[in-house]
Length: 225
Image (cartoon, rainbow, N blue to C red; front, top):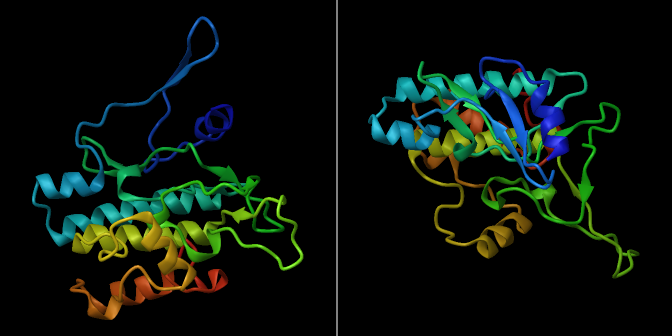
């Protein structure tokens, strides 16, 4: 909670959910974060409720991109680490804002890695990129933790998954119902969907998804691109 508070408190941008304050219980054992109440809910539910047009969906995606670009442009950059439709909310002014910074971390600009390297998988597996999953060197001992490395590039992969879901209504890996199947697909380096087979509003969106889902993290675009 302390890490989330430190990161969220420094974020000031129209496309980032604002932190108004926090409250600690008298025993200092529980904390509540205070932010504006957005009754439009998340981007996916909002578009379904208002039967949003493709133009509106693209506008909200653009808003989300601006929020992500802001996070990645900070010094040091912030990796959100859990980009998904449920964490993109819609304001009363119909502006999309990124929310939920519980997994967010600062990125070491020299290594490109975040300050959190852990053997435990954290995040929403269906929106995670292949390189996030535990791997083990051949010489590793059984009791050594496997590494899970969150990067700005993994945020970009997840953002591509959001674009897929918002524009088509299809979740990543739509034929796979549970996490085990998705994990297997990721270890086989399969994409969340085939961009060429989707009914998308333009070739530029097909190109965007292909770039976001490059298996080589270094080949993915930056948020500013």
